[in-house]
Amino acid sequence: LAPRRIFNFSPGPSTMPQVVLEQAAAEMLDYRGSGVSVLEMSHRSAAFEGILAAAEADLRELLAIPAHFKVLFMQGGAIGQNAIVPLNLVARRPARKIDVVLTGEWSRKSWTEAQRYGDVALAASTLDSGHTHMPPAAGWTLRPDASYVHVCSNETVHGVELHELPDLRALGSEAPLVIDASSNIASRPIDWTRAALVFAGAQKNLGPSGITVVIVRDDLIGQALPICPSVFDYRVTAEQRSMFNTPPTYPIYLLGLMLQWLKGEGGVAAIERRNLAKSGRLYAAIDGSGGFYRNPVAVADRSRMNVPFFLPSTALTDRFVAEAEAAGLSALRGHKVVGGLRASIYNAMPEAGVEALVAFMQDFQRRHG
Ligand code: PLP
Image: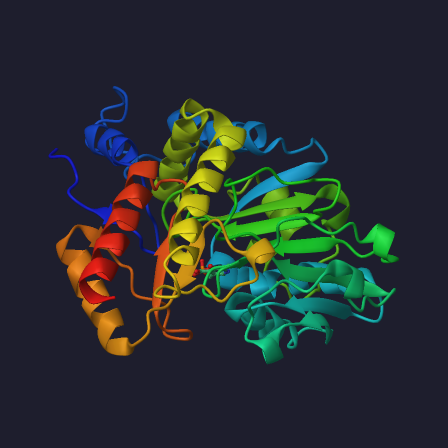
């Protein structure tokens, strides 16, 4: 395989290190002497059971997941979890209340979907201020009898990240904290004394699309609404070890390769240091541009994964995207909801990619500023 010529700043579905893709390619026709591709092998085979067990063990090790949490591999994406979470959790309390912290496009979708299943209220919202900060947890309105509280730990579109998980008990709530971590899972450690359920479409930091990771505390399992489809019931999924139906075998295999790569890079603590360095470098370039580039997010709440930034005009923005693409810096156009530019710098983005982007930005400013 020829080395890649571009740095991919795509927000998704997936960005993967070249070495991981190379390994998958090398094993495509014959998985480690089995004579078949992972695509072809039975999900009940010893070889696939090994792939599944290793993926779970590696995820547990990397994220230091305590024994009283289950790791589930599901389908339906993070969007699916917007329904699957309430189907499983809303009946925990008779009032069926769900408190949502609305901080951007993705928690907005969760908020909307949850309304089909419970009595939903906003614990806090940054809608009026354009989703440019995280509302401090001390100001959240939490209902004492809520079945759960939903937050999105990284708003992929708006570039706002929740840097410290709140201690809901200290805020007077016994409700479990549910976190959509689709775009920052495995980029930093998770405090399991505060998180009760973490879900993530795996595609950004953990592999390809088609597999959803759910990490759920044992006491939240087994209370699904009777109408919850069996395939989406956390108890059924846990009891069947994520094989109630045919699992997405190849995505699980690729997820396993990504986890192996992450371990080889030094694990989550090491990747967090790299992510801090990468995002710090990029924000410094934006803030140091004398206003030519602009990021509207409150400094303390800026995302380490998705960096939206803006130029003075749409003409310059179009030009930036085209010239960057020609220079091998791919997929920098911002999300349609906010416009402008966005650099997604997930775990797989090397520091050299950010260096190349910063050098390009400085050169672009010299020519067009
Ligand atoms: N939540 C967040 C934070 C996301 O970034 C995304 C996708 O970009 C989703 C949910 C939707 O995930 P999926 O497409 O896997 O349903």
